[in-house]
Amino acid sequence: MDIVKVLVTGGAGFIGSHIVDELLQHGHEVTVVDNLSTGQLQNVHPQAKFLKVDIYKDDLNPVFAQGFDIVIHHAAQPNVPRSLKEPIIDAEVNILGTIKLLEACRMHGIKKVIYASSAAVYGTPVKLPIPEEHPLSPLSPYGISKLTPEYYLRVYHEIYGLRYTILRYANIYGPRQNPKGEAGVVAIFVDQFCKGQAPTIFGDGEATRDYVYVGDVAIANRLALTAGDGETLNVATGKKVSVNELVRILLSITKKDILPIHGPVRPGDIVHSTLSNERIRQVLGWEPQVTLEEGLRRTVEWAQAQAALEEV
Ligand SMILES: NC(=O)c1ccc[n+]([C@@H]2O[C@H](COP(=O)([O-])OP(=O)(O)OC[C@H]3O[C@@H](n4cnc5c(N)ncnc54)[C@H](O)[C@@H]3O)[C@@H](O)[C@H]2O)c1
Image (tube, rainbow, N blue to C red; front, side, top):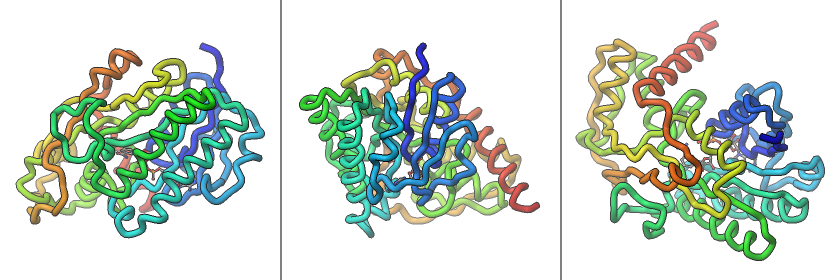
């Protein structure tokens, strides 16, 4: 495959930094823009060019003047509770920031945008596993702010011919996910297990989610460089995993003997969620490679190495 010049927004963050690694491994040229609000410079591969830029506040013209073929867009306010507390900031970054980016793409002749969307666009499932044509009924400002750019992408394609692939992520986990704040349950549990603390399970622990290893998400983005134009695709395993199952696997990996604490069910939490991956299998030939056990083992190893570094 030809070498592609790729701009990765949010490339210092959890998912974006794994995409950067995957692209570099396949010989592509990568530039990262990130304002380091939740991302970290140490996540950025040394072979990638890094620019500290805010996609909403800063002028993007000097960035785009460097010339790119494809933009992979992951910069976002990624936190659902924060979107409820600060809906304007959420909309500024996720909606207006994306429009600014699309304007720059249009003016600088970018060929394609790959956009990180979310299962949050679906809201409460009326069918499981959720297919892409499921009704779109977000339950939070975050869900709305991730969905709105999907419409802009379609319109920019219709009017300006800008190609796109929309990837709707299930629950992504893996190394570099920040356990602080309102991170994913895997990052929080791994951090607690490594510190010997008991995790809190809200409800009876039988609520389920669809957990995808971050390296598999990076592969989906790489495959979308050359396929999936005009498509909206779930990135998911299609499997339901309960919180109790997660705890059981983590206990066995960490060989810890910790009893979780049970708290009340959190209002508004969806009980079961899993997304269909039939379409992405057909369109990109993608399927998850890393089992939950293996992905959790890698995540625990990373967290233990981080903890050892912090002690030095
Ligand atoms: N983690 C998940 O399970 C999940 C699920 C669905 C969708 N997503 C989406 O995937 C993308 C990446 O999420 P993540 O989990 O890696 O989160 P993350 O917080 O690690 O990554 C987001 C990155 O964007 C950067 N950023 C934020 N605002 C910016 C701005 N205004 N200008 C430039 N950079 C900015 C942050 O510094 C960070 O590096 C987001 O778009 C998120 O909505 C994530």
